[in-house]
Length: 451
Image (tube, rainbow, N blue to C red; front, top):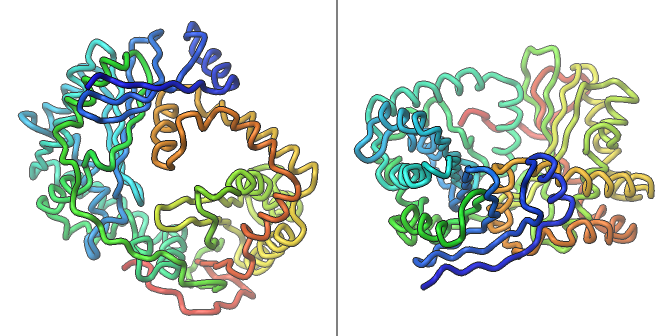
């Protein structure tokens, strides 16, 4: 089977930005679908002006796949895959990476497990082979396992009494008491100690499979050459691993306020509720509304709570598209005697947007910013490779970026007012507060934050 590839042009603004960031780049940029002789697919942005290849890969299954009682397994596994593999112990493996100027790292998120690789073209055979070894023959030797475990435990101990950590864990445990999302993805001191080498080997075998693999590549490689590298690197992986049982993930806590008393001068507040699916037809309208609500300076939250009233140095909110749940999350810190006022304002601002929608000026400014800022995120190969993977993971077509600005601009005020009612669910806003908030009454007992 020969290597197959299809093309889709990247929007002009992205091209212009990349040309400015990387002088001498080719006049046209294309996303190509590459299918290796062995049937492994990748999306490629080919660029031969610099002798560098950047790869991003993603597998389904991350921290949410951790067994109960062994939270942090995905994170620990990700931290150890580049600490020795095949014939190379930890020191030898790291030395080969350094000597050949190869960047290799792994990461674990809630719903995915990722790998990234960056190498000079002349070292690509060795670089891709080290990636293969890390995925298929990781050693998990005793010394690096205990060293990395100790580093993670030290970080967990530092964070376990942080108000932000407690507030977040209380919120998620209350919202998803019977789902992995309700457990700490980074683990706890206790759970980190329970994880064995056998657990990590089993996790890698279960998650690192071709069946869930998504690959994005940017740089100095042809489709034909990439096809060969894909087969050599990912071909040895099993087709599928053990399936993770699906668990319903509808938020259980709706409209509650949880308070954890803590002797700190400022209270930390985490808030949120369910959002709309990532493949929803209203996603472009939702992105405009979220920019208006929480897009930094000039947004409604910042203007009303920071600029007008000086209640905080910063307040934020964002969409969080999880595999089993779509969420809108936010947070703010403020003086203990101002928490009740701040929480009340968040509710008021949320309700006003739901009831009345945005103004014409807000919409115009948000569309301009969204379309203008998007290319600025793609000024180097790493974010471009990551974007190629995200598009595949979200099920987007290869030409999804074409006309993106037009689709943003096509959203009407009627659309935005309708979607605002769907998006900003004031009655479902759930708050988790850590501190000594005056005048704020808890509506339910806070769940234990450390389990």
